[in-house]
Length: 250
Image 1: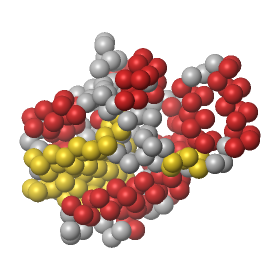
Image 2: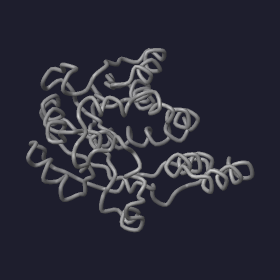
Image 3: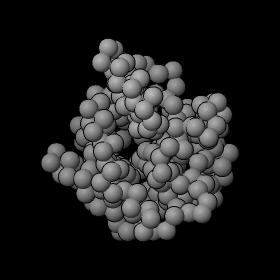
Image 4: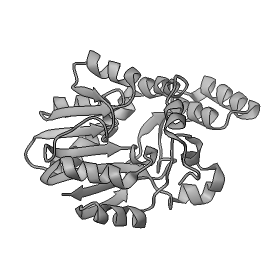
């Protein structure tokens, strides 16, 4: 984890206007994200046969929530970003501003809680998991994704790993630590797998590469390649963060 941890004020500053420039390439790759989120919903429906309420923790611009509603579920999203939540509200999605600590959700009120790429932003990950456990109904399902600190990409890249390039990432987890945290939070029937990669255009990868490594050489190289073959779809064998996906039950 980051040591020393930033203060609440410092954490808030990480989510200023500069942070949300990342939504531009995110929005431009909408189809890649929708395909990914449709797979997540299929995985959920294999494990929960009857539709009910889904909570999306860190819902961003609502791509997953849209799939939830289209699939016949009742969805609620929470996020800290007014910028992101405005997209959700324009699409008629149900959202609240806040995090699990402050949004005031009732106990045992959701059939499924999804926390995608969120726990690594948390100062207190055990509280995050225990709150998810609290708001789940008995037998409810949690789906969580986060970068794997034991992934081959992290071992290969060392201190240059992509996961370290996000200042808002405060902790880095592996499977053993997650299993222990989930046990302490009360979860059962835990299954951890490598997550599905998303298929982006080469343009997206090059844009993110230039964001992570802002120097003249990288900027010049990526600009040149984007002009020539930027629109090529690139099915990654694994995502650069080495993401893992966790399914666990209350």
